[in-house]
Amino acid sequence: MKRSAFVLLASLTCVSACTIAPTAPSVMALPGTGKTFDQFRIDDGSCRQFASGQVGGVLANQAATASGAGSAALGTALGAAAGAAFNGGRGAAVGAGAGLLAGSVLGAGAAQTSADELQRRYDSAYVQCMYTAGDRVPLSGRLMTAPAAGRNVPPPPPPPGSPPPPES
Image 1: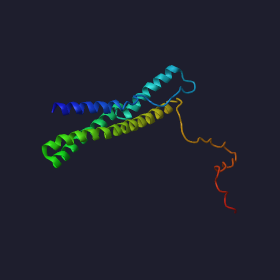
Image 2: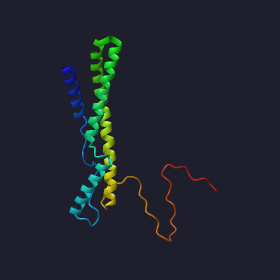
Image 3: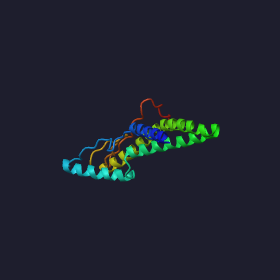
Image 4: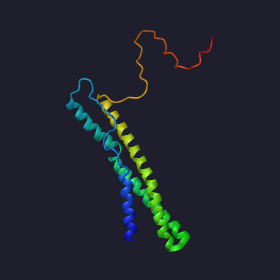
């Protein structure tokens, strides 16, 4: 029993070691126009707290470790049950070992996916907060300016490679 507990602990340690994820924003933000660096630092701290609250206060490493541990434990239990069903009491130990190994391998992938998703949600909340505070953040997509009031501006040309418009 002690040996299987040691193997489980060692496997979980390996799984959690493979899932180190940042605990801060992975996007760059810059001070807004006219803001001092001290104002920016206040905004940054406030937005980090906001983003942490939006993901439930869970750090990416914590989510990854929990996901990996859950997968390893489930694999061990299923392996032990399958081993016992196929080969009695002796098969349970072999099945538990195989289940632990498979669960740990699958858990590492699940852990990284959990950490990545949590980081994406954290970054999204951080960017929204910093933008609202008037700081500069990365934006994606095409930005278009609105036409000046009272001016008749023709529509933009079609994208390259588009078929010509139908003749009227």
